[in-house]
Amino acid sequence: MGGTMDSLISLVNRIQRACTVLGDYGAADTALPTLWEALPSVVVVGGQSSGKSSALESIVGRDFLPRGSGIVTRRPLVLQLQKTDQGLQDYAEFLHMPKKRFTDFSMVRKEIQDETDRLTGKSKQISPVPIHLSIYSQNVVNLTLIDLPGLTKVAVEGQPESVVRDIENMVRSYVEKPNCIILAITPANQDIATSDAIKLAREVDPTGERTFGVLTKLDLMDKGTNALEVLEGRAYRLQHPWVGIVNRSQSDINKNVDMIAARRREHEFFARSTDYAHLSSKMGSAYLAKILSEYLESVIKARIPGISSSINRSIDELEAELNHLGRPVAIDAGAQLYAILELCRIFDRIFKEHLDGGRPGGDRIYGVFEHQLPAALRKLPFDHHLSLKNIRKMVSEADGYQPHLIAPEQAYRRLIESALNYFRGPAEASVDAVHVILKEIVRRSIGETQELKQFPSLQAEIAGAATEALERFREDSKKTTLRLVEMESSYMTVDFFRRLPQEVEKGGNPAASSAERYTEGHFRRIGSNVSSYVQMVSETLKNTIPKAVVHCQVREAKRSLLDHFYTQLGKKEGKQLAELLAEEPALMERRQQCAKRLQLYKSARDEIDTVALSR
Image 1 (cartoon, rainbow, N blue to C red):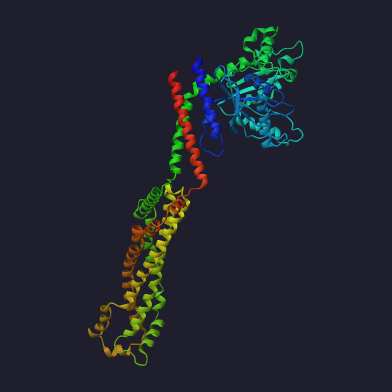
Image 2 (cartoon, rainbow, N blue to C red):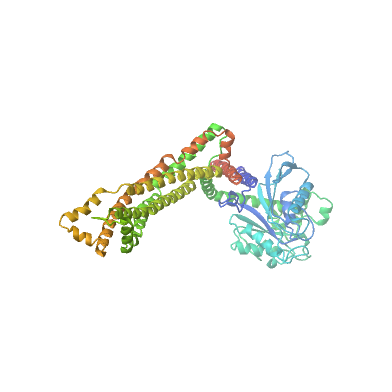
């Protein structure tokens, strides 16, 4: 069992160390659940001067933590213990100094203090940014311990009034997590009812399932008193037994009494005590480290399926995100050109899908022809143009000094030609409306081309080239549609004019017609005839304008939207191609982080599977 236990805890430690290297320990900049949060860890909680730091040093077997009065621990310390083979020298490594090994543990203490001061200054300010320290020793068990600033009730000089709340919030952010094992440190010479650590542990872990109670300073209790009520679980019961420890005294520290000797004295204290001798086998820092390690191993075993599930889910999410971010850019110019052309092809396909009905957008073009154009034609001011007053004016001007004999042909022509000019407006409006829709479809297509999102320069180039092409298509379409209107004005349908004199020949009275040529009824007949002709032309243009617009704009956009861009692309050199494929630094960094996290998660999954199979 010992080999399996060591391998499981060692595996968790390795994964947690890898997490810290990647910053994957609950960083707020990612929506993904972190692997660190899925793994159990031991958090040390206690009031200031409760013996918390001494308890940690007793577990480690090394004197390495800063000491002093008041608040000493001002940043979280993530301490990862890794058991090494016999005969190897103990050493420590900091995450912020990964290439430096510390074999002098007094220098470890100094570096903790210096690193704290780098962030908080030489004051009593606190910071939630953790310091990560790994200790490798043959005298430790595989554990991850997190030491937090001591809980306090008042702010001292140099601290903001909010420090009491800030420290409690920081501690809560750790102990509220369901995978956190709480090591609640309470001094024996303090009433358990007033213990800050127990109070907080009870709030976040009311059943006591993940709380270990540790009683320090047993050797400093008043003579004639003991802590059996607490150690035997009668004062405050937890699901796990209370453990008493005896730390080095200040005199021992001043005399540089080493931790091995301190552990021996601790063992002797319990073995020779009349109060605690019957509990001596379950007291002391060595026993505390042992039961923590055993419990940690049982927790890991129970949670392996959940951890594996969390890891697999994160792998899927990371792979999806990497696909979304896109692959790294090729270096070779030929590969870069191929990549650009492939991206353009994807964009072009999406653009055509919008037009052909696979995606929304093309239906809006149909709406221009089916609704906007007919509505614009109906709103043309023909009623005003063909008013009796205007018709009389146009007929009189066309006749000049000699009145017309049968039908006022020149007046008819002038009335029709000037009426047909009104069709230019709807024709141009249809062209512009379709142009706006095509530009919007280009914008949406670029946005929907996921592969383009990592290349803002290429996006801008494609958008610019497509816009220029659409402008050319619009100009061509406008010329064509206006030409249709001009064609109607240039040659009028002869049958329309031939019909007018025939009405007179079929039974009309020429003399009467001549006499009535300037009467209101005559002008009304002229207006009716012109209106009929204009309506005929309107129906024709309602059908031909959409044909011209589709031919000149939509069809050309589908066929040659990026042709000019491709021509210019072929003239670009390698450096220019690389500039088109330049990525935003934030995106490159995000892809690199995702790739590293994915590698970590896959490695963790493989190791967990291997350990699980060997059980």
